[in-house]
Image (tube, rainbow, N blue to C red):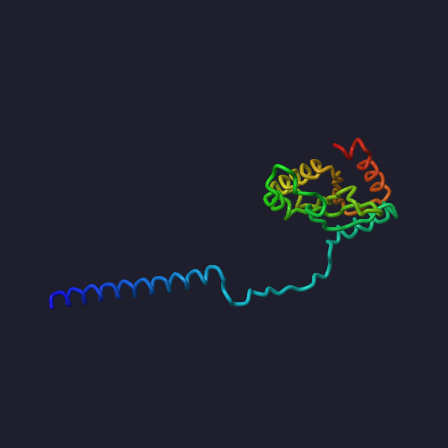
Amino acid sequence: MRLVILSMTKLYLLSGIILAFIAIAGVALAVFQVMFEGDKEEKKKYEYKRRNFVMTRAEHECFDALTRAVGNDYLIFAQVHLPTLIDNKLVGQNWKAAFRHVNGKSVDFVLCDKAYIAPKLAIELDDKTHERPERHERDREVERILQGAGVPLLRLENKGRFDPSDLSRRIAEALTPTNALK
């Protein structure tokens, strides 16, 4: 009788351990399922509206003057992000980190040749925001990046008016081989 009671006790203990193991395995399976399948709910859909203008008034005036200054020699693109102009995939550097470093940066205009739409000159229109100390740091970094990539940069101060003949002269000067390689 004693042997039967001892065997029954072991059986109950063993069945309790098995049930506890099944419960723990079930909880672990549920946790893994949530972790790896993610939330089945639909991702949040943000709403947007169309902007009335692509450029500020000053940028538009500068664009018009640039159009007159370069005539049919170049295509002009506005609001160009740096990753469009430069390649971050250089041997020996972390490509993702290099991309993240330039991804939020842009220049106001880019002149491209018509045959291949290759960037020839980046143009920054410096308004009052460029006077802030943190903007100085950003501007120096953009200059460094473009210079290292071989893209010349022309900085234009926003004085309210843009003279196409002066712009034409400054663009030609910026595109001369000695200046373009600086």
